[in-house]
Each structure stands twice: as C-alpha cells, then as structure tokens.
Amino acid sequence: MTNLHYLVDMYGCAREKLAYVEDARKALNLAVERGRITKIGESYKQFEPYGASGVILVAESHLSLHTWVDEGIVLADVFTCGSDVFPENAVRALIDYFEPERTVVRKVYRGRDGEKVEEEIQEVLYEKG
Image (cartoon, rainbow, N blue to C red):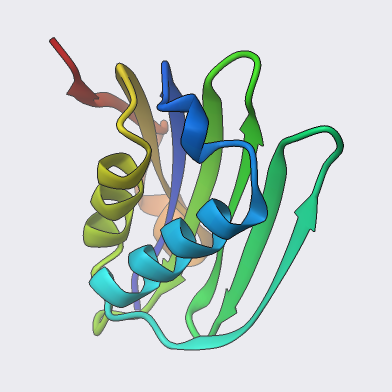
C-alpha cells in the first residue's frame, strides 16, 4: 500500500477564486473526481469578509485547502493511500483550478512507506510565464 501526502503551496493565484466557499468546494470536488478518489463527506468554512477553508473526507484519507485572498495563496493537502487512486491528478486539478503563478509541491511518503525515504521530495511542479 502506498501512503502519499502531497503538500501543495500555490502562490499568485487568481484571487477571484479564493474569496468564497463555492470555489473551495468546486476545486476540491474536481480534485476528487480527477484523482478517482472515493468521497465520504465534506465540510467548509466561509471567513469574513472573505477567504475559505474546506476538507473532503475520502475513503483513502483526505483533501483540504485554505485560502489567503490578500496574498493570493492557496495551501492544500492531498493525502491518499492505496494503489487505485491517482493523487497526482488531484494535485494537477487544484493547480489548474486556481491558476497560480508558482506552485511548490512536497511529496511525502507516510507510514511504512515513510521508512523507505530519507527526506521529503520537493519540486516546483508548475511555474507560469
């Protein structure tokens, strides 16, 4: 079994997509769909005057995101276990949705898989321009 946790930091995002829960919901559900992940439930928080957080509980673990509108930042997690899901596709869906100028993705092996890896892998997956 593979336990992968992607930490997705997106900078310079399209701010009009960061302010409200509706966009957090759309982005996370798109990620679940593209990753072929099994959704169990979801919860969201709208901040005032703007900003949103959301989490989707999935059979394979969870997806979450938090927005900072003034900074144009979205921080997200895609944590899955098993070999029948495609977490990289879920990560790509989030990047496609929020249109960041720059994205840093950290791929962390968790549980028994974590013992196989000495350090976390960091890579810039996407840089606009």
